[in-house]
Length: 320
Image (cartoon, rainbow, N blue to C red; front, side, top):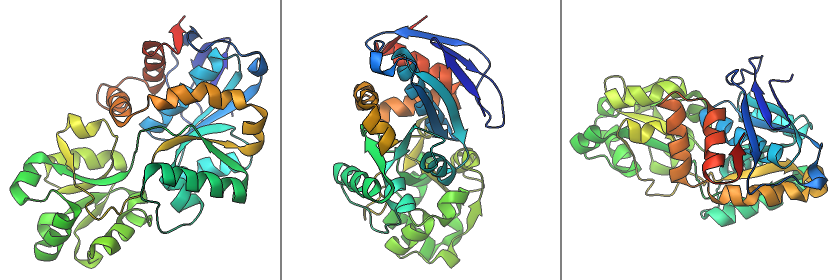
């Protein structure tokens, strides 16, 4: 299903079953990314998961490859990590940004993460290519790890600034540790169950409310429904709502650096894609992606527009 059609540098975002973005045409021309003869007219399908950061990252890929001359098809906004993964394995999607921790734990089935970012990237890169002929390239500095957050005033009132502090509060005053969790975080082994084991938390004592991820932020900021909530560390609503992340003082959560994921066959046939995307990935820091997320989730802008403007501001493309 064609949700976003990019032709001659024109991005037409049309609604469809995958719920693509706005219907406002966005145009880009070459900047530091110039047309590449080897990519001219090459069909490339770009995917992403169904949340703000992923959609923005997907559009960043699209604008880059359009400027390089590829014939880009948009399949962003796919529901859930496993669906995106299945689409890539089956060849429906050629390229997407994904997260090293997700690859290592969820796709490859490992229980113990690699503690440093580069080591985690290299481990998932090597294992996924050997097991599934999938290639990971151009790791970004941004680390969108899971975390527990709380309102700053809640942290000041309770003295809970770390996950060890949180575990102690669950043990001594469970009602004060009421926690909102997203559906995936509630069941993933790199989410609440694994965190509870690592910190000795008795889950039966936790006052836990399972809600949609988007609900967690305001509920935690208000501190009426929940004192704590599960979040992704680079979400723009964290600084906007003056939330603080609890320190992971036992280093439980894996590293979730974003990196390009492609089938090995596609990556080997088109090495120009990695060359184009590597300098872009280098600029995707926690600070930069958090701001892009804030522009969408707090200011209400479209992910495609935010991605295009960031690409223009950094000189990769020009607004046409």
